[in-house]
Image: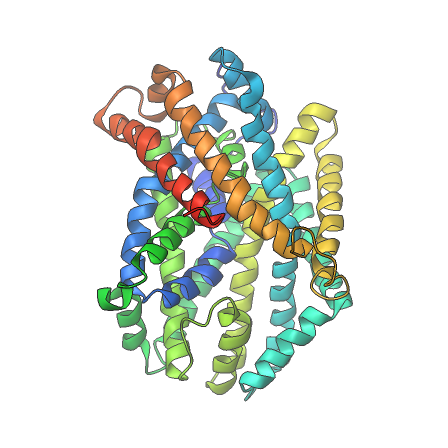
Length: 455
């Protein structure tokens, strides 16, 4: 049933796919979540466990998702339906595609709000709002932003327009052109930030914190830290949300999935490590706590930038870097829904992209209002922002990841998988098959059960 091309277009080269998939994987989680999570669990020991989890959980599932996408050449829903029919399996497997698109839809609704914070902080950094700021002042700046629905509405709207315009232009003219600029720019900004951090006087201390395993610090919370590393490895690669499957559908049949995915996982991990190398020295040089949680980016770092020579310039660069990471991830989240609307509604791509953008924008308004005016409105004890975050991260994505692993490892014809991945049953294929059948789904299931409080 395999076709050579997608009706939506194709990547012009293997390099374009690597940039696009890396852009999908590289997001706020790398630059925001990874540093503070590593900080909470003692630095180097956590990094080692994280790298192992990427190898045995993240890469096998990512390979499976790209393989399924390239085999089906359609949106995740239609791809899973077609592949299930080809294997004479129940069409209920299309639920995997529905879970992916629903996850992307919900994630982007609150992700765009956080990206809006980043846009606001670019402006604040540029106007010198962080100059000589103290902890109380930094907390006040962030609290004032969260409490102002009109500001959040403005920045959320601007960001969704940025995302919609890229996706509306198509695969080569939109997605590919965007990542060809944004990804190199992101790496340049990261390297500039690391060079800046190297001048702080605490650079070696930051590297030591990030890369030297401190297993004494790790002890006592090893189980908690391992589960966190497993979850970070899974979420960091944008798995289970349909984006990677969609991007795989635009990949040439001649391109090596295995080689490309290893490169993409390596780039994703490199960004996370570079972010840590940039952030920890700056934080430590100013006597601040590297394990200060989600507030590390929006409350702790502005204090550091405000105290350092050239801090205003580098604060702007840092938040532009964060914005670029959010933008590349966001366009990958909108793409599966847009493709499905084109396939199933017969709409032109600009119309489909506009409709998808508008729906997510509306839901995002509920998310931003739940942080202020609607803070008293709760569903299952949570506001819209927290509920969508919890439901996607803890339920939809892990369930989708497990189902992808099961379908690729147990349902899809063995010869089909071998042909797509390695061109035959080579030793690398046998390793992948073992991991995708036994190791990866068990690992993600453990993450899922831990997230919902069952272990």
